[in-house]
Image (cartoon, rainbow, N blue to C red):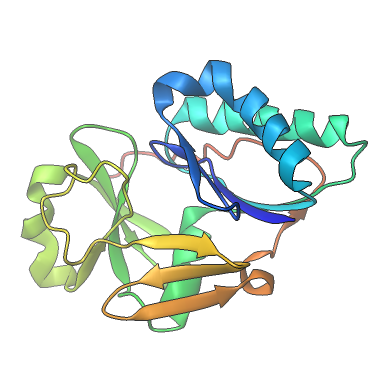
Length: 202
């Protein structure tokens, strides 16, 4: 079975099952290894796309370790693909599904990243409270998908995507679909936590 696992967010989400499973951050350390092994026993996972970066360190570290352990237990009979959130958003942008500029959440209460999808680069680290000040220069701005629904105050331009039937579905003003092969781009033998911390250039 193919699965899509998001270890880059405030919750770990496991898609491709009968219904998505998620772990709150307080449960990650002690629960993720057992849950992933139990899910494999039930569903026989053989391929996983991992959305890897740039959020919470514990999710990235523990999620990678648990998935690598699963591969060892399965005698390497599992294939990993790793994709970062900026890479995924670049695909959305190249299909004209989202704007060039967007705000990415980086697991900080007050700071966010203003990023350019065309250049795949960080423009600046900015204060979340100042996002509206950048609308004129970078309009329209999209907001990152965040499972904490109260983090951003404007939800109309917030991204929402899910995974079902071997397709990633982006929901904006309409539904857009990415097939498995469009996002299974970087095959890796071992998952590495993709922290990719960039300097504060504001």
